[in-house]
Length: 289
Image 1 (cartoon, rainbow, N blue to C red):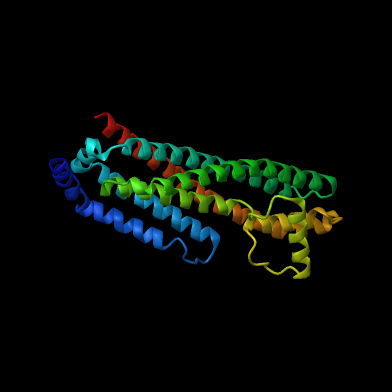
Image 2: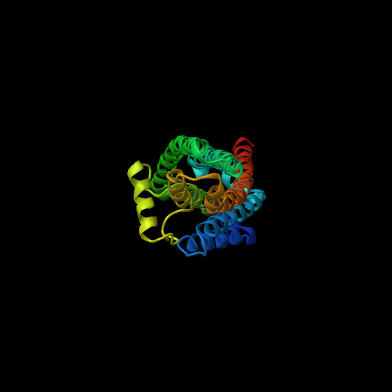
C-alpha cells in the first residue's frame, strides 16, 4: 500500500503544481467567486459568465494536453474517474446542445413576430400573429422545463460525487463540470420566464402591474416577460392603421434588442459546445490510449 501511495504522489503532484494547472484553478476560482456578483443587466451577466466558462475550458484543454496529465488519468490509481468524468462530459454536451437549440428556436420565434409587426397591419391579423407567437413560446417553454430538470439532476449528481475525488486533476475536471452546469442554468434563465411564470394568471398579473405603474420599467421582470406584457396590451387595443405604427414601436424595439442579446449568447453557446466536444474527445483518447 505504501508503495502504491508513493507512486501516486510521484505522478499527481507535478501535474497539480504545473503553471497551466495553477492558471486553470485560478480561473475556476475567479469564475466561482463572480457567480453571485451583480451586473448592469441579466444579458451582460449571462455573457460574462458564459465567456468566462469558455476561457476556463481553453485552460482545461491546455492542461489535458500535458503528458503528465495524461499519465495521471491513464493510471489505475484514479479508480472510477472515467465513469464519473465521462458521464459528466456527456451530460454537459447534451444539456449545452439543448440550451443551444432553445436559443435558436427562440430567435426564430422573435424574428417571425418582428416581421409581422413591421408589416403595419392591425386588427385580426395582429391578434393572430401575436397569438401564434404566444403558442410557439408556450411549446418552447416545455423544452425549457425539460432542460431545467436535466440540469437539476446533473447538479445533484455533482454534489453526490464530491467525496470521491482522489487526484487534484480529477477534482479540477469535476469542479469545472459542476461550474459548467451552474452557468448553463444561468444562461437558460435569461431566455425563460420567472419560476412563477407559465400561467395565464401570471401574464395578466404582469399586465395589471404595468398599468398600475403607468408604463414604468417594472424592474424585477425578465426581458421576455416585459415583451409579453406589451404584447398583451397591444393585443387588446382596437388599433386603426394610423395609430398602429406608434403602438407597435416600443414592443418592436424591445423585440429587436432581445433578438440581438439572444444572438450574442447563441454564438458563445456554439463555441462552448465545440469546446465541450473537444474536451470529451481528449478524455476518451486518454482513456483509450
